[in-house]
Length: 203
Ligand code: SF4
Ligand code: SF4
Image (cartoon, rainbow, N blue to C red; front, side, top):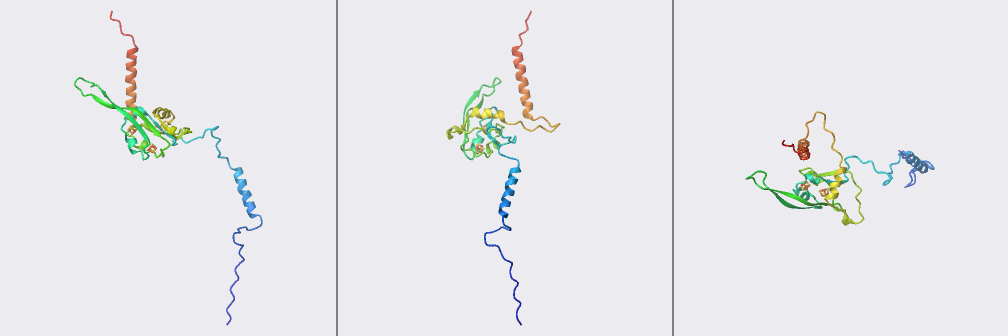
């Protein structure tokens, strides 16, 4: 008995060709062009127009040097070793008779070499005294790589660009730091007012 002949396979297009009809590729290309032409442009005209950055953008690191105790933790933990800190010790006399003198570290230099920094944020995370912050500031390019080492004054100036923290929930307890700062400010104002007020005449 003769075996039935197999069904012939449908013709395949020549290898490398995906066109289904003449001009298919052209129509597809024009469709892409049309789609791109009608889409909203995302090109930013920087520097004429400043970008609208999210408030918590990681631009550069700012230093709140009033909070820095020169504990050196940030410099030790920095994987790039690009934080340079110099300090000296100062001794303050005892506050009460018979008390002990106190010594404290005074910051002489705090600099970050942004040509080495990889913006990992470890220094900000490890600082136990909230002295380092991210700021969205990003316009600090220099033409000389050596000038990318920014010193404490510049880092302190960037503190003004750090966004305020989000508001507390209604009814939340006031943070201890704010309460302490308010107490210290009230004390200072009272001392200044006492200095400015004229002494009472003893008649
Ligand atoms: S962000 Fe990272 S690399 Fe940059 S200074 Fe801080 S710890 Fe060092
Ligand atoms: S970890 Fe904070 S407090 Fe300590 S040296 Fe660095 S910035 Fe100053």
